[in-house]
Image 1 (cartoon, rainbow, N blue to C red):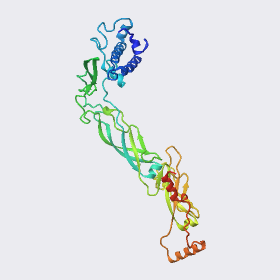
Image 2: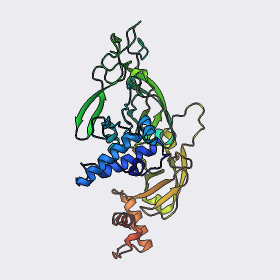
Image 3: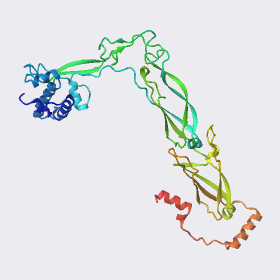
Image 4: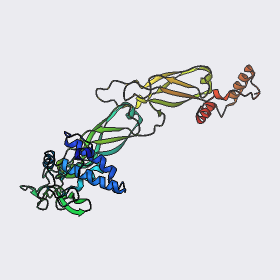
Length: 390
C-alpha cells in the first residue's frame, strides 16, 4: 500500500487513539460492502481497515512511523498476518466500546434495584391540605442470611474455569474480511466471571428476598390526581445487595360530593329559595377545610365562610371567593367558585299562592309576554359557548 496510512484515515500524524477510532468509524460506515456495493468502495474499505489496524496498535504504529513494514511482509488486512478484531467493525456501526481485541470484562453481581410504583387513594381534602399515610409495600429486601453476598455461610464465589474470570468467551472465524473475533458472555457464569458453588438457601444466590414493609409517606398539600410522590431508595434492593431503587406513590383523588376541582380552583353549587334570591341573604358555607383532620403542628383552619347573596341574584350567577380553593404545590392558593341555583317552589299552600298572585299584580306580571333575551348572558348561554369553544 503506497498511500500514507494517516492520509487514508484523514488524521494528523500526532492524532491520539480516540481521533483515529472516530475517523475509522466514519469511513467504515461510508465504505463497508453492506452499505456501499461499489467494488471501488470495497477496496477502499480494505485500505482504511488496514490503516486502522496499524495505527490503532501502538507497536505496529511505532514500527510504521520508523519506516518499517508493520506486517513483516505478510500483507495487511485480510492477509495471513492480519489480526483485525470484528468488534472494531461493530463499533463503527453501533458505537461500541470494544476496541481492537478489547472486551467489556466481567459483569458485576451487584446492581441497582428497580424502582417500584404503588397507587393510593386519598380524599379531596387530604390532597388539598396534605396528609401522612402508612402504606404497605411488597418489594425485594436484603437477605438477612447472606447480607447480599448470595453465598452460603463460610463460602465464597470461585473463579469461572470456562472464561478464567473474564466473564466473556471469544470465537474466532475467518472470512473475506480477515480474522473475525467476536465476544459473548460466558454461558457458564452468565458473564460474572465467577460461580457461586454453594448458594444461600434463603435467597438462592440472588442476595435478596421478597418481604412486606410498612412505610410512612407524607403527601404534600396541593397534589392532584396522578401526581407521583418519590421516596428515594425505598424501592427494591438490587441483586447482590445492590443499592435500592426509588419508590413512587401515585395519588388517586376520590370524587367529592360537593366540590369539583379544576386546577387549583374549587367549584360548587349553592341552592337558595326564590325569596332569598329576591330579597338577599347571608349563607354560611362549609369549606373544604371542615373535612381536614388537623395534625400536631398544623395551624387551625377556618372551616366556614359567610357568603352574601345580594338581592335580585339570578339562577346561574357565579360568585368567586378568593383564596378558598386548593393550595398550590409551589405556593399560592386557588379560588372557590360558587354557582347559585334559585329554587322555584313546586307546591304552594292556598295562602302562599294568594300572596304570590298579589305580588304578581303589584309587579304587573299577571301575564307573561314571552319576551326573548340575550341567551349569552345566561348560564345556558355560557355552557353553549363553552362547547362551541368561544
